[in-house]
Amino acid sequence: MAVLYLTDDNFEKETLNNKGIMLVDFWATWCPPCRMLGPIIEEVAKETGDKYKIGKVDVDQANETASKHSIMSVPTMIIFKDGQEVDRLVGARPKEEIIETLEKYNK
Amino acid sequence: MDSNKKMTYDLIIIGSGPAGLTASIYASRYNLNNLVFGKKIGGTIGLAYKVENYPGFRSIPGLDLMAKIEEHSKDLGGQIVYDPVQKITKRGEPASPMSNRGEQDFIVYTLSGQTYQAKTIIVATGTERRTLGINGENEYLGKGVSYCTTCDAPFYKDKIVALVGGSDGAISGAVHAAEYAKKVYVIYRKNQLRAEPAWINEWKNIEVSGKGEAIYNTNIIEIKGDGQKITQVVLDTDYKNQKELVVDGVFIEIGGVPGTSLAQEMGIEMNDEHFIKVDKWMDTNIPGVFAAGDCTDFIYGFAQMITACGMGALAARSAYVYLRKEMAPQQRGI
Image 1 (tube, helix red, strand yellow):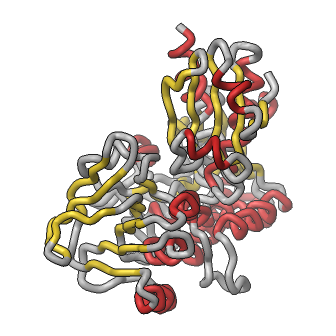
Image 2: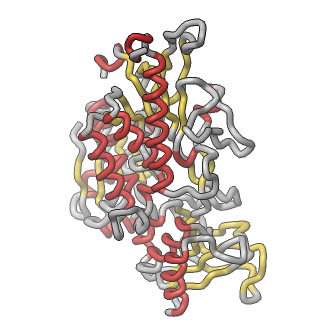
Image 3: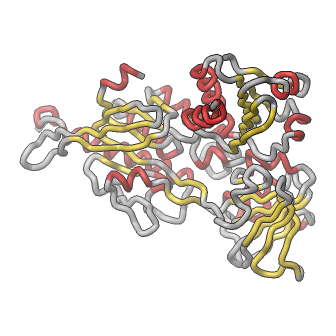
């Protein structure tokens, strides 16, 4: 599934009202590990097909959403299940680890 | 990558920081078919908010400088794959006086399950962040604890932060944090900062402005919070008659531990602190395996970008000389 670019305007609708598992990558343009993680997130989206919804939040563009979710470090990936946060991964991770974490919540 | 799997590279470089990418630049110019494996874009220097001692660049963000070096190495034919290497094994034996042609290959296994072959290897795996190993450090990771000032300083606008360490990385980080925070404490276990005087001068200006305070001969022994975020740190020595310091964030910049677990499994010799032992040509104890950069014991204690680049160049040159010796005598012109 294509990666969704989320903003303060559509975050709630796309994430909190979503049924199923969703991964949201909070990132910033100035952060080196975020640049590393960007293509990995794209690959996760490509490899997992329709199984998971995947979104990205540029913390500069979506201040309110970032602060509502207490983002103090980038990159941070939050995993939501039926709109509820169930896990968060701080720092860039390999693709395999991200998929494994998603699978864990899909059971 | 399937077509790559079948071929044998002249050289595989593990690590995409300054040492690894410089090795690739030199290797490409020696006509060595080379492949670089990266785990972190730009290595440790990629996290530096500014680099001001690399010749030719008065002041440049670490990641921008590394992007230029990456472009340079790709332009010359080097390929970079961001797929962490899990294991390296050896097949066959190197050349010896009895057989002048070696039949040695190294097999590189990556996390995604791919395998690659090479005649020579350069290990340039740098270091991993050293942690304090104290209560609260893991619990508050991403909730006030950070190992990257470049990434996270902007989240502390008008807040109070502590920076642990006294090196270039720590003090440049403190200077960066002071652009956002209303107060920055530098907490250092020794009595004198060990950063370059140029960084110390910038920090002194922040101290004079009243925004910065350095606390010497002191360690943080615990990070406390309310479950959601950090509220204070506990010191091992009183500061202004207090054991606790109220902060919103703690940046930990206390250097690195060598990322040499791969090397250890391969049987590469290391010193007591797990830095790879190299000679002046970056040879390790295993023929055909070289090492470069922060993961080596070469000029230990002076981990600079320019020295890492120098080591990368030396290691590539050694791989080139080694491969020439591995060729049949007529090809060497004997």
